[in-house]
Structure formats: structure tokens, C-alpha cells
Length: 252
Image (cartoon, rainbow, N blue to C red):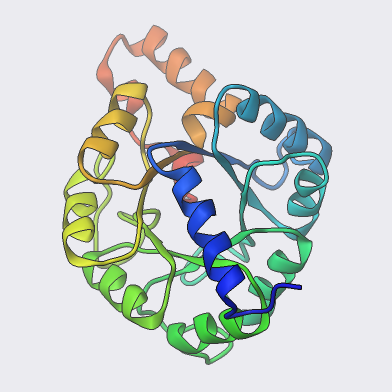
């Protein structure tokens, strides 16, 4: 039996990360109140993107993680959104433990330097997860300072997920490739590029910037946003149709 901190666990984590190298992680999520907000639908979407070549899937909520884990063989990056402002991506240790218990191989947590709702520091949260589970921790960051702090705190992976979604940084209209490059140069853990990646070309650019893997959500798995882009293009005839919109504001 593999125990937290064992050599076997470390080897397994290394194999998992290596399997994700240069690949596409797809975020399969629907927002509250949407027709696709159902674990069965999430699972069907996850099965579809795996068929298309996804090396991992990013899944929100224990129910969805549990459903996907029962049918999908690729690693699950699990998270739990609580609210929509401040520290809301897997905000507490208890939320993170629930996501791991549901079947996530990697648990994504808010990796910023903001105060966490349960009073634990980021380092304490990561240490507890490593002590009590075999899951790896992905720190969703907004800035280079976040990534450096998260890596020092023990995060196994850092991502650019929150670039443009905290008070320290403004969102652009495309992926934050500069932040990807800065993080790759500054930390010794894998960097996942995520956020506002809309095209295969932009995904390739993120890899060329040094990302270990690329995570895409809205542009693949959110029909309402994709339809809105086309609808607005037909009615405005301009590039404004691909500007960041309300459906893209939850760091998918």
C-alpha cells in the first residue's frame, strides 16, 4: 500500500506529471443554473475530450469528480468553487480533502497570498494535504510572486489560472504568456498555462513559452460562451466578439 511521502508515491507522481508533459488538460465545468450542470453531463463531456486527446481533465465539485473518476482513466485535477470572489477555488483544507476523497489525483487550490477562510496558510494547507493524502497540489496563481510563494510552500504544480482575476493583476484579452515565461524561469516545479486560451495556436504558444502543459476550458467545453462569440461576430462584425465576457470570469 502506498503511503503519503513514500518512494512509491513519489515515483507515481513523477509518472503522472511526465504523462501530462506537452499535453492538453481540458476543464469540464458548467456554471450554476446552466443546463449542463449535472455530473452525468460533465462525465460525458470528459469522456469526449479524452477521446479527442486530453491527457487530464479539470473537474469542479465532489459530485462531478466522483462521477468522472468512475469512468475516465486520465488524471483528474479536482477543485471546488465556493462563491465567486476572493479565495474561492478550493478555499479550505476541508474542501481540498473532500475533492481528493472524491477521486482527484491532483487538487487545485487557490495559490495566491491572500488570507484563506479557514485561517491556515498556503504552506500549512499544502503540508496537510501531503501528510494526509497521496494527491498532488496545483496552486492556481495570479502573479509571479504567488507562484514563487506557492512553490516554496510545497506546491507540486503551479498554474496561471488566476492571472487577471485578483486585485494585483488585470486581465488581457488572451493568455498571459509573459507570466508563463516568468514562472518557468523562477520556479522548479511544472507550470500549467491556463486562462483565456481560445485557439490551438494560443495553446501552442503557451507550450513554446515553456509551459509543462496547457489547460483549456471555455473554448472547448462551454457552448454558451462559444455560441455568444459567434453570435456577436455576426452582429458586430468586429474583433470585440472575442473579448473577455461574463461567462469567462470564473477562471475556467
